[in-house]
Image (cartoon, rainbow, N blue to C red; front, side):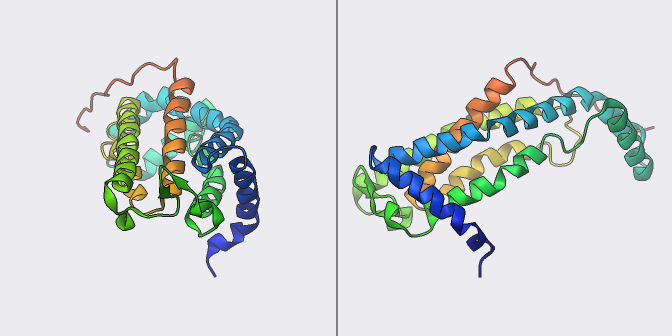
Length: 230
């Protein structure tokens, strides 16, 4: 039994809500509206994550200096970092824990739009919502998937640009690679049905817009000069 089957009661509830919306709107638009409503309900968690990220940005120069100073003494570095967070009443996980709390909600929506159900029999511009790109035939269906991937790539670029600007500590492990993960949504969308692709486009667009709103007063991060350890 898959671990995701534990989410089935919530998936059934989400299915009923989307079905009710689909009685008033085209099913594809019902997916968009439902996704926006869920993201709106999760907005307080996003605000908490933004506060944690701002705290990390504020401490970034001090963290970089400690890493430079204790580069050859990892135990001393960890102790100094712990003391810094304690003194500043911050947490190194302040920006990610709220995001992790959202994971069950995203898992429910992913399962709803990837598990066979009656919603996936509906169409958008003649393309079944349960169709995968490798089963698309004819220029019309291929055009719909092409437009979806192009839109996801555009949103991915905006997310990539914002992620590059948000880097406060270039010396941190993976700092140079993480922004490129913004384009992973495009690759992932090729593996799921059209309905899940519409969900991904909606939720990633919301994420970019929400981040821009929550960080509207933040200055672009300036790359920190990395000095050689003495």
